[in-house]
Length: 243
Ligand code: ZN
Image (cartoon, rainbow, N blue to C red; front, side, top):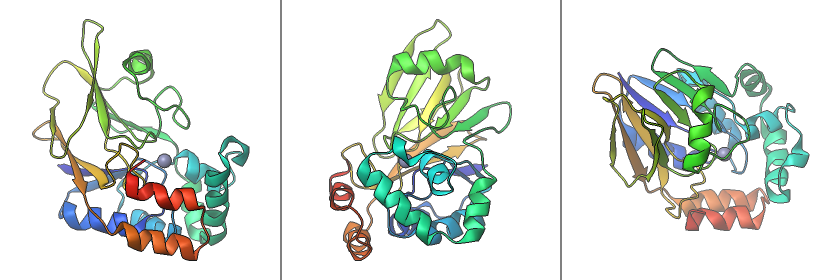
């Protein structure tokens, strides 16, 4: 099965459309959370994931939008955008998000967690030390994560070592090994790894590989919609820098 992995769309429908167009056909789609928040089109993104995602989990912004997480934990810009997203979101998508959890064990090989298996809602899993200390919190070979908006991976070897690798476009991870992995496909709608292109990945369960991808999208189009919605200026500008 070829599974399209996407995360942190953040209501950026223009970026999501570009990813779906570039990805082409797939056998399944797994959504790693934060479908809404920050961006200008929460309903369009929720519609797309509600209709397309075979498996979806919730992220911290999703949970805040449906009132299950305190907005005091967000910085002012994120909070303002989250409140605006909440005001737009149709009741059917509130119900959909309420039915999702932030972590799910999929089968004997794969777990998905929005942030980390230890703290599925909040932890930014960025360092090898964090990856090692998170290893006991899932029991599959691979844990797919989002939340940091950085396209990266960690390889955990049987002798207790951990190697962190940042992906470049089209880089490939071979899972046919005894090693365990954390893999983050990056963010569709608000990349933070100094590459403004939308990020996603493909998992091929037959070949045992994950390939990372980037695709350009019309950032100006998303920014215009954000200006029209009076969303915070810093959130608008950061898109063009990928940070
Ligand atoms: Zn996010």
